[in-house]
Every structure is written in structure tokens, then in C-alpha cells.
Length: 80
Image (cartoon, rainbow, N blue to C red):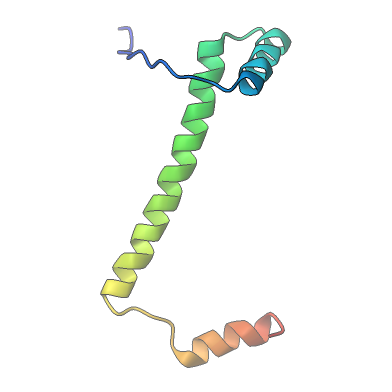
């Protein structure tokens, strides 16, 4: 079963387009393949960061903070 796809048109700075063309030549991959791989990597990283921030906000909303002694222990461990 073929995967569903959507088309996305983007404007690239000339330098980025040239770099993409160089990767196409060096790897033998298509611009579409390289672009999708780059976007997957970026989106994955951003989703992880957003999830981590949300988890911290949820902890804060619950009042789940480190005690002063715990904070002091971390500073002491790292020489502060």
C-alpha cells in the first residue's frame, strides 16, 4: 500500500539550494529524499524538546520542585 503524501513548496536561500544540490550529487539521492530526511530529523528534535518542556511545566504545576538541599547538593557536586 503506497504511503499518503502531500506536496510542500518552499523557497530556499540560494546558498542552501546549492548545498542541497551538492548533497544530491554526492549521495545520488533526490532532493525530495534529502529534504524529507532533514525535516524528519528537525521535527523529531523539536518534538522531544517540546515534550521535555511540557513535562517540566507539568511538574511545576504540581509543585514538584527540587528542595533547597537538593539544589545545593547539585551545585556542590559540580564545584559551585
